[in-house]
Length: 334
Ligand code: TYM
Image 1 (cartoon, rainbow, N blue to C red):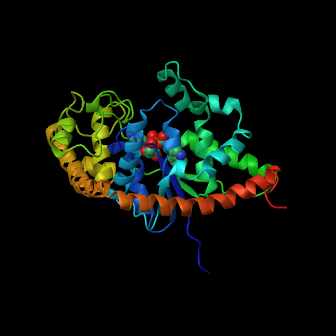
Image 2 (cartoon, helix red, strand yellow):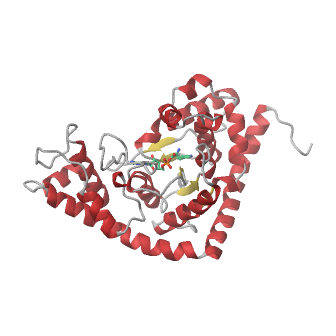
Image 3 (cartoon, helix red, strand yellow):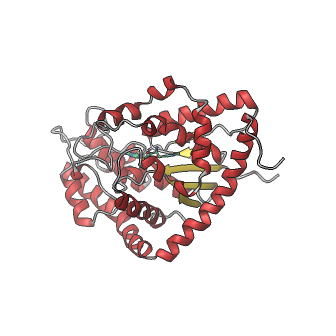
């Protein structure tokens, strides 16, 4: 019997430039999974507008992100790489799922709590129902696995709860997805405040490595990374800066953190920083070269977006139609 390929879904927001955290926590795994699975990878522009955006800048950035993903190794012939707003089934299913999600569940989301603290007066309802749109993204494709960083785990648990609740009411409508979280790299921390995750929306540019930072900028940022005064290279809770550099190194080199510790045993922080910087440059330099070629090619990007949004919509519509029937919406043709 031929075993069916597993279905993978994941998304990324086009808010700010992608960071090394996005790459090691998510995109690297997306690339690895695409050979053995059926993969849907989505630039989630509708999620990005839960925070006020400059329209021209957002439009540009969604294309930047799509190009970076291709440059990082996502093959748009093999994986369905598309823009969320080009497949209207996402928002249609999100509305239905809103009616099956409780206020209490959404108020417990730590990302909502964090973001609403930073949002000033703009605590809009999109920010609150954000995880429901995310659930719709995933459930539309009957995904088995969702490769994400640790920070998305709570949203994934909510997605599972919504799917199980819906299935209990209406039969097996949705596949209940599992998170896929890599061993190393699932939580890359800020280079300046290593107790905080590395984030593209951080105001301090030295705190993150953007995937499009040039080699000298990368070297400078790693050199300035906060460490400690103990001088020993080992992974420990009370050594967040050094542990983070070790995580970055081992994740890029595809080795375990213990192997990384061994490699640096007896060495100083200067050597660690130098090797981390060179490992990052070695991955990002070829990515950037490809990126600049792809980003210029509007005809190619248009073709990728159009072809893939059609493929996505075909699958999404099947699930949406089933859901509409289950909840009692009248068909267009009797
Ligand atoms: P976003 O855009 O914040 O991040 C995209 C992916 O990168 C991971 N990530 C990290 N991993 C390790 N260390 C870090 N410092 C780090 N920062 C970010 C995130 O965990 C994520 O996997 N809500 C999602 C986007 C989304 C989505 C989805 C994801 C929308 N719909 C459906 C999966 C499935 C988000 O804001 O990710």
